[in-house]
Length: 361
Image: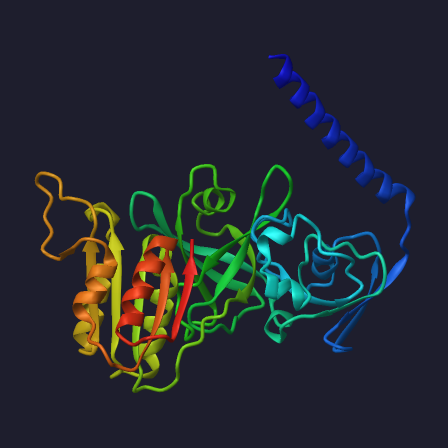
């Protein structure tokens, strides 16, 4: 007991000292105005020294992705610091590869601006905007997944690639935070952003979005993401997802068939039970309109007594292996838990597919 009290006391002392140092730095040290140079003069800024790089960028409406709210836990706010960022911190190293560290990649939320700093940011991120929208409708897709349809107010339209995502601003006890959600509406609806959101117990973003209703205002930044759809119509498209991983797949497929009505596309979607099935009827109707669109749902859990299902069973990578032929030129998009991503990737690579984009959650 004495040992535990000693450890607790020591930990409390360390936390108190850390907080004290942070407060002292903020009150006693004045770094003045610092130069923040982005992309070799493409966007020169002057910012107050002492802030984090992430905060300074947000103050100037440059919205770097950051799902954890700047706490250094998500690793999304990576940008290249060419000079002026100081040494890499212990809070950054777990989320950076050795190659990234050698290349100057840093977590913007952990870098303090204490002098002139020179950074490189992908051009796509410089085009990200803050959007205001109004909830047009909400639909319960399953017992824990909702569809939220947002109509844009300001700006009135968004240009996004299939498979990209936005970061919704949600209230929290510590102030506004941002959480990432894939866009499920197609690119040909520029005035709409539709989301598919699973309720996570205690989740700040999902709890907020599951409680909004028609006419409510929702703010978000975007678009973000590195998915790139192959424009060659002879390349077969494969989409594999599970749960709320349906969102980017829906965006890709609906965008695809608006542009290439005869293109070959496969949708493989994994569910645990029949309670987790949604959009199946919509996809079956689309496959009647576009015969080259193939839909395969699979249930991984055993059927309960009285439960009816005549589709595939087992984990979804087994269905991918069963239906796809080897040696076909194809591009794949995967969205789901890491184990699913790993299993499907192995199957696709065995069949000769290396053009694979994925998003783990």
